[in-house]
Amino acid sequence: MSNIRSAFRNGKAFIPFITCGDPDLETTAKIVRAAAENGADLIELGIPFSDPTAEGPVIQGANLRALSGGVTTDKIFDLVAELRKDVKIPMVFMTYANVVFSYDAERFMARCCETGIGGVILPDLPFEEKDEFSAVARQYGIDLISLIAPTSADRIAMIAKEADGFIYVVSSLGVTGVRSEITTNIGDIVEVIRQSTDTPCAVGFGISEPEQAAKMASLSDGAIVGSAIIRIIEKYGRDAAPYVGEYVKRMKDAVRSVD
Image 1 (spheres, rainbow, N blue to C red):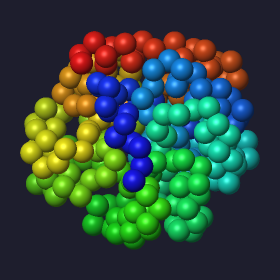
Image 2 (image 1 turned 30 degrees about the vertical axis):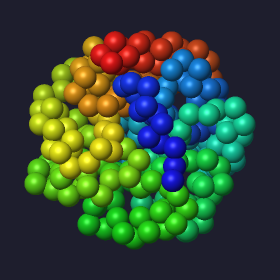
Image 3 (image 1 turned 60 degrees about the horizontal axis):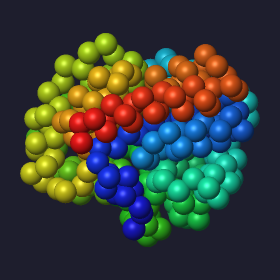
Image 4 (image 1 turned 90 degrees about the vertical axis):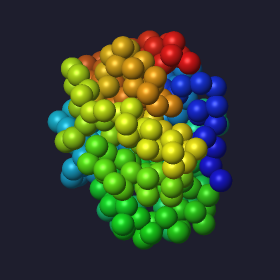
């Protein structure tokens, strides 16, 4: 099995999301290393897709910049293989079912296994349809990571019981993006998860400030941040790595404070 759970063994986890190829793959490699060096416990790598339905405008923009720069799934696998020479923390892919399907699911999971990707998050894959991918993922030791949203309601326990790796708790309705306040009762959702499984859960969507990360980590096993990091990359471009590193350190310090 994958090493994803190791990200949660030393207290609360901080999980940054980075779109591969924005602004280019060389910069992505620098950003991943900066995040790992500054305390990231697990890194979500986004494989760009032309129609990212779960994403807000910030990550949509990153997808378009990466695709227009010529990024492909094969190039991203090559990037991960190179990163794995020195980046030891768990890494997972976040992308869309069509990306995996068009690449060929078995070939995709085999390459994840070869390159050291521990899991795959497919936000557009309904729980009821996950068997299409989960069997082949399991064959290669890849965790197909489940998402639980505020709308999951009476399905929370069912999804949690079958979850692998970690559970991505979606904090808010709608698409990804920075929010000034998270009003969903995360504590209630996590309580149902805890009653159903010992699989760790981390909260994402809308977190941007250290105080928010600390609050979400206090209710769960960790915090996930995407759009706020993509904004830094959008602002600084090829010089973004040290700025992302500083941000990751601040956020990791915040989640560590609630251990």
